[in-house]
Image 1 (tube, one colour):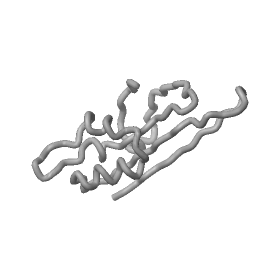
Image 2 (cartoon, helix red, strand yellow; image 1 turned 90 degrees about the vertical axis):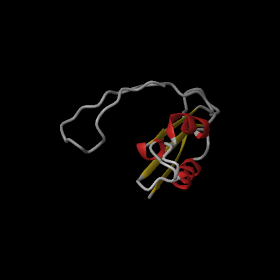
Image 3 (cartoon, helix red, strand yellow; image 1 turned 180 degrees about the horizontal axis):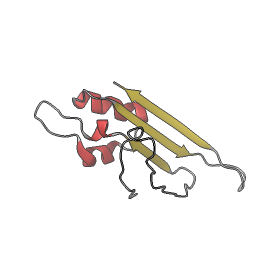
Image 4 (cartoon, one colour; image 1 turned 90 degrees about the horizontal axis):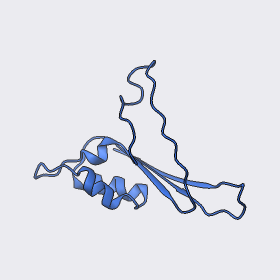
Length: 103
């Protein structure tokens, strides 16, 4: 999903951010990662990068964070995974969230 880029949260108090809305169907998953995952650098000076991140994006948040840490990240890592549960009623919505914040 394409989203607008912007300054990191908390840099400027008066900054306004673009909003992106989407509909999650049952079992859909969204995974948000900080630059700490994508910018992890190993001993060979290779970035973990977007391609590796996409490959593991369906893993639990803690697994993604640990993978970036093991790859060589020394900076902060934040991962948030959201999965929409299937629900019995059409008017009811349930969401599961998992998060991993490390280093």
